[in-house]
Amino acid sequence: MSTTVTLIYGDGIGKEVVGATRKIIDATGVDINWEVCEAGAEVFKRGIASGVPEETLDSIKRTRLVLKGPLETPVGFGEKSANVTLRKLFETYANIRPVREFPGIDTPYKGRNIDIMIVRENVEDLYAGIEHMQTPGVAQTLKLITRKGCEKICTFAFEVALAEGRKTVHCATKANIMKFSEGMMKRAFEDVAKKYPSIEAKHIIVDNCAHQMVRTPEAFDVIVTTNMNGDILSDLGSGLVGGLGFAPGANLGTGIAMFEAVHGSAPLFAGKNVINPIAVLLSGVMMLRHIGEFEAAQTIEQAVLATLEDGVYTEDVRKDAGAVSTTDFTDAIIERFGRTSDAWPKRDYKKIKLPELSNERAYVKTKIRKTVGLDVFLETTQDVDKLGADLEGIVADMPLHLKMIGSRGVKVFPSVGGL
Image 1 (cartoon, rainbow, N blue to C red):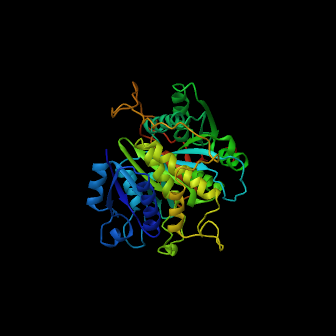
Image 2: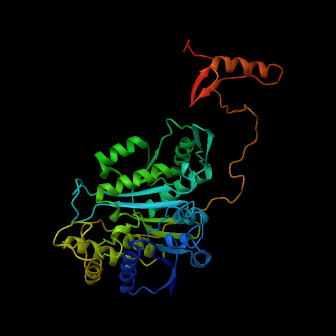
Image 3: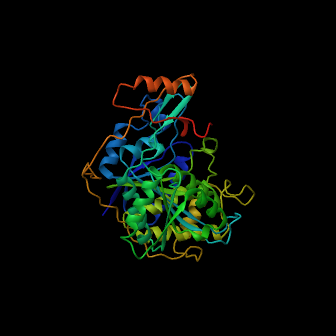
């Protein structure tokens, strides 16, 4: 049966790298109906503030499957990136980023057998973008973490481990400092882990996780984390194996899947036919596995490895006389269909089972609720002791009392130890 995929070439080098990916996937013989749609810079310039036209949204609603190139947000057009719009609109709550060592690519970590899957929560946390100016000199951003969101992404991470035959899942949080928000992720992870006794579950503080990824990256298998932490760790991971040109990715939600490279549109290289398409291509391989085309996915993946092992590379990988064009690199991969490599461990891949959680709006039920206090934000240049005395006077005849005044998380009134 034919599978219909919404195909978005994107901006800058998108036409070249997505075009190469389409050609290679088609060469496997997989029956895909590519429904070409627009998003990104040119759409913004036509006055569509989201960067995504209705016909593209309609296509995605029908196909529920997207392969896309990098999208720009040109200065002066639109308020948010088209990428963010698509992820939020279709609630692709899980972002997955493989981090693997490639043959023929020289890095300080060559020979370390790095093979990590980073699973990032994709719609909550600070990246929800809920922020405002408290005062002219103080900005506030809300970090929103939900129990349901934590359970979904942690369950998803364990399902990724099962689908790929992995043995360990680390949960990276800053729960030692943010005990409610990041702490919720830690607690959800520990509860979800009980349902997967065959997989070793470990919690790690996120800064230590970054430290250990640089020191001993081969010690990690699957890492699950919150949105901003995942953004940082996944870019760190790509740096270990050769850069963003080798960083595929997928954004998945309930009944929806979008596959895209992590890198940008690189407009300075657009049209020059010199860019390595591996990041988008391996995103396409992830898409093939998602739709059950495991043989075609394996054929492409092995051909990519064989091509690199044979010393074939593009100018952005190594700028010397041996570099080939994007077009020639694409053809070189197709020529190596059927070749195998020992560079990556063979895996019996399965489709990732998406979490099925309750749809009840009151996901966390509670029997008792009570008001424990009221936070009031004040802008003032007044001395804090005078301010405290004034506020105590204001509430003197109310069923309230002033507990404390804090500034940036530090108690400043009543004074502590004379400070």
